[in-house]
Image (cartoon, rainbow, N blue to C red):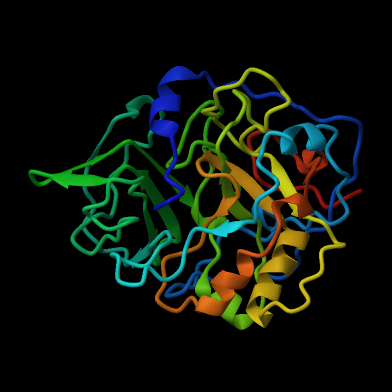
Length: 331
């Protein structure tokens, strides 16, 4: 994948420090009352409706450090959808999602970052899809949903050698819970967040409604993170560089006229729910699931969205508890 992260090196070099970074006060944004859309092949939603990923951020104020962060984020370029057709060069781009049943065999995984990984057995096997394919030299994420228990398992740098499974890191969540990982812990993502809720999924774009924020990357980040992120892997001490967990909103003034209807669906999500900075990688690459159904026209239109049309928002008022992703709905 072109947006391959650099966190394998950065994790060894930087501590996890959480700071507020909030400037001024703000009021909480509205929360969805209806259930989020189900993950294809399951009856499981991607976390509760009152989870951070589903919070409407249209009324949140611009963050006091928005201009400073954006000045270090290559805003002269357009967004890049890090998913879509590969035109024969291996599997289609994107993060594959494997759905399994509750009786799937679970295996022990040996982790490179063992102190910050969840030491449970993971439902990995011959059916597990790995980002970029099993021969990839990229990030090799594996995302697995147990449809019987609605439990999410994610691993980074996933390999099977000599009948043993290995990964750089691994984490698991209940999709019905708002609980966060211990602060300072990574996950399969540098921000310590789950990957799945930030992926664009084909069924939701096809059906015309995306109800969550979208995961994206940039190349130079600070050694800090914002709630609900739990971890960082940046190279800069300055707070003028964006931290893990920073949330960005497509300005309401941006016009999607001329874009494909499905691209307009994504634009609406970027205005309502925004983007969440979740890993180091190529600037303004945003992620979706691997699927053979993504249309060429949609991918081409998404590449027309200018990074300069975004602003960072102050999401601090959404927090109910520093250890929960549940957001406030009261002003």
